[in-house]
Structures are given as structure tokens and as C-alpha cells.
Image (cartoon, rainbow, N blue to C red; front, side, top):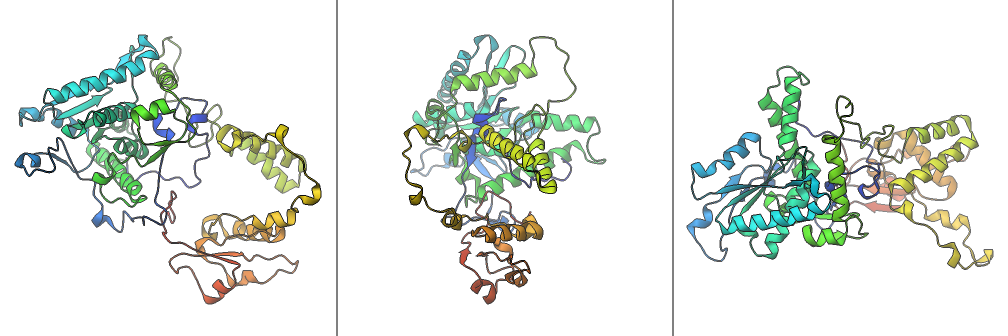
Length: 486
């Protein structure tokens, strides 16, 4: 709100996957953006801004094989993120351009219908959108503003994806613009998933109203006007969308919209085939019924049926930082305390406690933690045929992290540890001090066996190259989920 920049995190996300979470999650979190690796070189959305664009034409497309002046009558949006005033103007466009008819379709359903009402509401919405096309409407706005004590909202992603694929199956998608007016979407990832599954424009009205409330309560910097707050928010979101697009080598929103460059994690085929057709979902999982239960659970938190004492402010779910009673994290305070005591006091019992804690955390948060060995079917072999550990550790390698990213102390300690084991440590792209090639007095070596080369930078010399056991050359620097250099 204050500086127009997206919030950055540095340590990754170690909380539980959405499909393993103990608390209900938004459906966006079941999707992961794909990214280009070597074959499609990435774009730098900041330095190559001249080729990036969020401008998009929306509305009926007509026959692309016939040249017709009517095909030029489309609505140009400079950004897919609409303000409250812009959405109001679009809803009123018919008063100035009578042939541009707009209708709003409610994506909520009565709470009394329970989980069965979820799919029934989706069927109704799809039917109403098709009917709107037949009646000549050019813009359909899907809205959850009717959400209240007795009405539960469909997820905006389920609504958009369901309607988009319904229209594609019926060969009607190019006959209208599909907008979404939602309280659910607020983060860059949310907007990207909505755009990727067919939304033409999004109005995050609750996020905007929450920021305006912050302004009224004096929770923003002095001198920042309501207009500036909304401008900063949209600027941050727009830059975030460009950054996400660039990871796939895509430069225009027109190419990104409806491209479905995502993979689902823990979503059942019944949901995929209906709302996200063509998306990979390798482990199946959550059905419409479970999504409906999550929607009812979140609705109960917002509109409780009992008049319990409500604490001020929203509950802290522990999504980004560990919170007592919140989502589990792989790295939690208990485990870190055990590790610190084990290292500082050489305490074996503390290390054993840390190991148990880490094992349990991985079981609660990751897919690999759910795997178990089937010992019953195992066939034992003579120990003489088992590969010795000294050969196995030769295949152990560390991640390619530069000393600038994890500190010289950590970087050199990893190198010493891997050299003692007989494995290989990696310099990362930050180079390595030639002094580290000399052995220490106690015989330890801080030399990294694997040397990286990235664009010929960071002290890549003939000695650096010749002193390696293995060379790694980065072919598409930046084509990764992380934000190197930030």
C-alpha cells in the first residue's frame, strides 16, 4: 500500500501442502505455476519491460477468418485488475454503448443446501452464462457480493474455471468477456490462476475496501491518499503478474490468459475434468464435496451461527510464519531449539529429539513424508553384496547455493563436511576464493568439488575451472521459481 511493491520472502515456504493442511485452504493453493527450463529462455520483466504488456482486448471476437469492421469493436483494458470505479463504469457501459450489454451473475448459494448446493450452484451459473450469450450480452460479471449469513460463495476459481470450460465445450467462449468480482482473490498467485483459467478481468473488491479501511483508521503512511493506495496495490499486482509470466517466457497477457500453465496438487479428476480440463493432477485427492465443506467452514468463521465472543482482528493461520495452533511447518521453534542445543552443547539426546521432530514435521507437511517402505515383501541379501557406505556417499551433493546467499561460514562448513564424507559440495554461481583450495592444518579442505559458471560472472578464471571435479554451466539463468539477487 505504501510503496507499490510486492512483499518478498527469503526462506521459502515450508508449511504443509494444501492437500495435507489441517485447516481449510483457498483452492488457488492447490495449483503450482510451471516455469521454463532452458528450452524457453525466460524474460527479465524489469530490464525487458518494452516487450511486456498487460493490455488486453476483451469481448466478442467474431469470425477470425473474415475481415469485418465489427471485429474491431472490442474493449481495451490496460490491466486485468480493475478498481471499484472501473468495474462500476463497465457495468454502466450500456448507457453509452447500447449494444454492449452487461449482466451480473451471482455465484453464491443458500447455506441451507449444504454441500450438495455447491455443484448445483455451478450448474446454475454455467446455464445462466449460456443463456446470457443467447440473449446478446457481451460482458458477464461473476460476483460473490451476495455472500451473507445465509448465502455461501462458490470459490471464484471454481466458478471461472467451470464457466470457461463449459463455454469452450459448447463453442461459446469467444462470444463474451468473462469478469470476476470477488472477495476471495487478493494475492498475485490468486490473480494469475484466475487469468490462467479464463478470467478476462478481476475486481478484488474486498482487498480494495480493506485497504481503504486501513486509510480511514490511519494505518498507512501520512500523506498517502486513498487513490494512491489503490494505485500502489494495482502497480504491485501488475508487476507481480509480469514476473510470473516472464518465468514461462511469456511477454503478453494475451498469450498467458487461458493458457492453464499450472499443475494441480491433490485435486480429484472429477474437479479437474469439469473446471480445469487439461491440467495435470498426478495424485488426485480433493473432491467437490471437500471443497464445499471448506467453503462452509470458512463461511462459519465469517458468519458464526452462535454468538460467541469474537476476538478483534483476523485469526493468525500461521501460513507464512509459525504460530501456535496454526499450520504446521517443517522448521518449528521446538526443532530449532533442539538443534541449537545439540550443536552448542554436543548433546546427543537433543539431536535425537531434533531428528524425531524433523521426521514428524516432514510426515505432516510433504508428500514424501507419506511414503512407507514395504518391509513384508522385502528380500534380504548377504551383507557382502551391499554397496559400502564409502561408495554411496560419493553420490551425495549439496545444493548450488552461492556463499553470498548463505554466508561464507555456512558455505565453507558445507564444503568441509562433504569433503570429510567423500561427497561433493557446490560453489553456486558466486565463485570461490582460490585460498579455499589449500588444505587446513588439520587436513580439512574447504574446496568445492562442483564449480558453477553463470554468464561468465563472479570470478570465473582458468584456475577456478581447472580446480573442479565437475563443471555446471547455467543455460537459462533466471528460469527458476526463486528470485535470485533480491
